[in-house]
Length: 196
Ligand SMILES: [Zn+2]
Image (cartoon, rainbow, N blue to C red; front, top):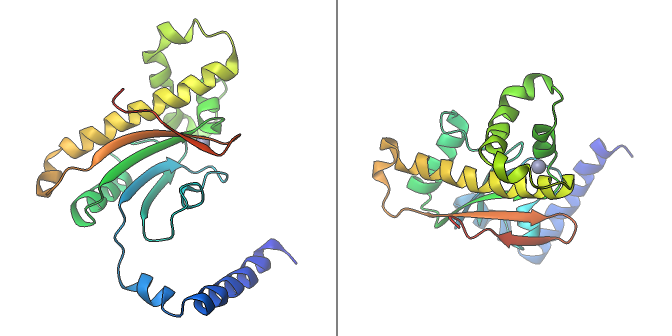
């Protein structure tokens, strides 16, 4: 069976299992959400926070793009942070990168990636701001890992800038901002202890 058809079968099976174990499961979830986390992460197909955080649906409000970028002037991220902070009252806003991120690797190369180039330019700017440290790291994988971490810290700062802007005046309690890096090779999460 093609995977396209398979997923519908999987879905029906999963929904039946869930309802069998807990008849009110979907009813409860359909009424409201009370997430504690806003998770801003990479689109990478291997990085699924509900899996590695071991949290059921309802705990993590989510936004993903290539290399977990926070572009304050982008309406998508601005709306997500606003809604999460002001209306859902999330306690934590997390920017989560991951080692071996393809977006970061692309930004470290001189190659053109077509219409992605303006997006990658933001990551290249992060690299430029750490130029003096980067030149001393000979091993490419080490440079790559460092860039993943620096990028997370920079995007955390961008979240803070968003929270500082006038639109967020209705904020009752300011959520705390955190930077994480997920390690694909071991399945483990590292807290970057933002602001460091
Ligand atoms: Zn990635």
